[in-house]
Image (cartoon, rainbow, N blue to C red; front, top):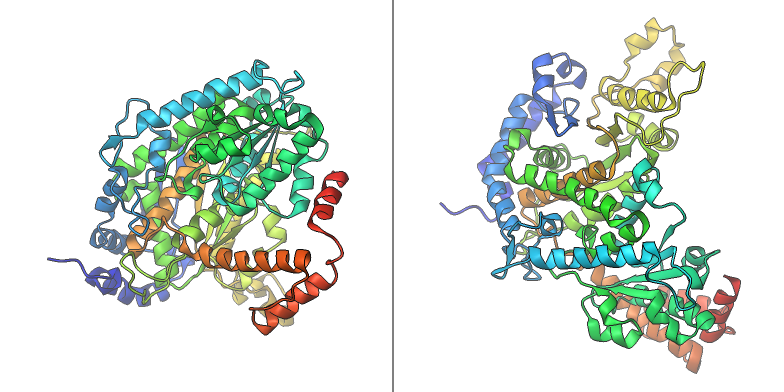
Amino acid sequence: MASPALISESEQWKDLKQHVSEIQTTHLRDLMNDVDRCQSMMVEYEGIFLDYSRQRVTKETMGKLFKLAEAAHLKEKIEKMYGGEKINSTENRSVLHVALRAAREKEIYSDGKNVVPEVWQVLDKIKDFSEKVRSGAWIGATGKPLKDVVSVGIGGSFLGPLFVHAALQTDAVAAEYAKGRQLRFLANVDPVDVARSIKDLDPETTLVVVVSKTFTTAETMLNARTLREWISSSLGAGAVAKHMVAVSTNLPLVKDFGIDPANAFAFWDWVGGRYSVCSAVGVLPLSLQYSFSVVEKFLEGARSIDNHFYSAPFESNIPVLVGLLSVWNVTFLGYPARAILPYSQALEKFAPHIQQLSMESNGKGVSIDGTSLPFEAGEIDFGEPGTNGQHSFYQLIHQGRVIPCDFIGAVRSQQPIYLKGEVVSNHDELMSNFFAQPDALAYGKNPDELLRDKVPDHLIPHKTFTGNRPSLSILLPSLSAYDIGQLLAIYEHRIAVQGFVWGINSFDQWGVELGKSLATQVRKQLHASRVDEKPVQGFNFSTTTLLSRFLEVSLSLSLSQHAICALSRV
């Protein structure tokens, strides 16, 4: 029997829609009293502990969600992804970020070719190059070792590697390898970002990694040309080949830029930018900072979740469980947002990375065959490390809109501190909040409880917490490179699960194209107005007014003067 064009037409979907009314009559305060239910909603894998008992679900709900997954052919879609089938149909590409961290002996095929040997060729090349740079065998144009790295890229070429870098900075093992070295990222085309990325750096000791698959990304290449000028103006044009390398597949443009093609590190069309942190995009700059051996542990952690996701039954499969719960929250309960709340400052850049990974992947309005969706897909992701977030937006989460929350914590701190005379260690103080906040959201506090606490009548409405606000908790054993790789892969696969169930293409991103094409028109107009003093034309009244205003106050500065001023201030 043929599957319906849209998952929402399936009987399993309709059954869940009807089930919502049953859930609306329940409260987490009562659901949490069912110990058997709670035990059934706790899963452990390699020391990672998932507790989703504070979700607005019953055992019956979960059974219905598993049936929905079956109706959506989730298992078959996972197998197709791992098998290299071109599930990114709009771009006719395989989706094989799992191959980036596959074991050397693994076989994963795309277009009939095992891609794993090519992956390891690049990894071996990164290992060799990073060891040369770190040891001083590779030196700059003036003979000095290169101890500082600036990675130039945007979007997935920036957010993923930045998350891992931030997470590793305070890991004891990684920090030891990073002594005396700096890694910075340049993403925004804003010249302020350029100034910040090279502030107090010496071109003689700096290596620039330019990350652009096609070597044509407008923002990245302008930033790359800016840093090329910074290097060549100080050390001469011949220094570029010793101070700049590339992550790209366009070797002719790499060579034309002045970078030796032998120092270009490849990645492939079957790697989406936001899924590329495990490719040379992330592995090269991170290996230069922390050593390849540390980064290899990160890849091994991601691989362990890849294997778990592929083989574990859905009932104990962490990415599947959290993915199905997101579908339930977004599409059936109508909660459009999700808060990612890591109780670790080391994970301060995790939410921004997942924001892109999730919203660029699943922010779609049509099914994979182009049919308009009659339901909401995708979710608005945001977050901040605890306890900072508690003093920022938790007010809304507790007493305003209902926003499902992901609480992420670690048993062991990267930087343990215990002060004599204190009741608990610093980490225990942090984790006290990690354990308390989910219960506060679930249980709330009702007027009767407030009366018993002798709260004045006029304050009772203001101090009432309705509770019944869903969350899940992920407790990691630590935040080593291996654990960080596992956490990343859990969320990558979670997002794929959501897309597979919704029946959308989670691996293209046509939504970013229109604004970029319109920016090209604006760029031409700015050039024509500044160089040839041509009036603004061809835009609507609003844009014409804004552009004219912008040009009016800055027309006296030429493009070359802008560049000179910017470089002289650095």
